[in-house]
Length: 342
Image (cartoon, rainbow, N blue to C red; front, side, top):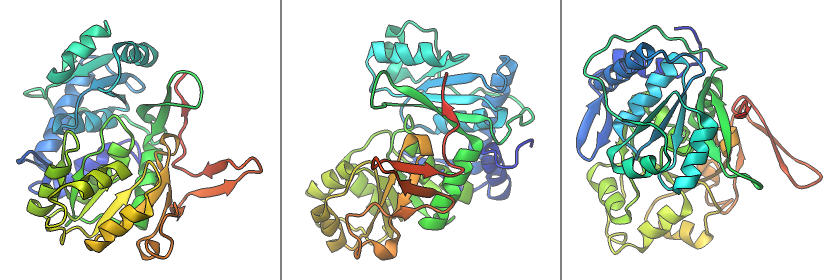
């Protein structure tokens, strides 16, 4: 393998060392690390056969699926950039991002074919090839891995380029601050068109050999049922996720005893909502980030969750922050992105 910090090796290592562990639990379909690794290898082979090379883009329009995870790791092996596009976009918005990213290949899940057709760009169904031998890894540490569109303060959304090294270091910092172990069961509901859907728990879980309960969308009652039935140990969401779960009739009696840690980001968590979860025995770990930092910047350590309730926290390991005279938060670290696309 060419890069030292490249993420393609994460799945390759896991598929070799713990092949029979469950990597993804997707609507009770269990995908083991060996199977996920083989799927990524076959996709990488098909991409290479098509002539895709380092720096080319593969755009996707899909819900959270195991197949999309395999696409991510196939791109990671080849140094190809994955541009996961939001299924919440309007047709003109999707058309703009496709024109801007100029993908060599556009893969679409069946459910979103009509939206893709409206954008007027040729696409193919997202499917795993039946065969194919893994090509050699081509990715380097500073190669872009993700092209994630983020709404700025002005103008059209901009594509943030996150390199392998950015993703490597943001996951290392997250692990040191809040931790994932191979015994964890991780409930993943964040959409995979968002960098948090990859770099907040999910990728780290697959590096560590944990089980990820992968959900296509967020449904409050179903999430509470999954925490109970799958014995989920950790999850991540935005405040609205925790609010809607707390309002569910199931919340008062749901067995949350397995949930040792819950992470929140995206917006400030109301103190009353923090207290409601604390009454059920669950401490919420707060954080702050942005796409351009891959995304982890600040995190409130678990031991400060009560004492500093409502605060965004301290910088993750390897991250430095400062406040400018204009009251802008300045962020520096190996997680900070390579720049905007074009």
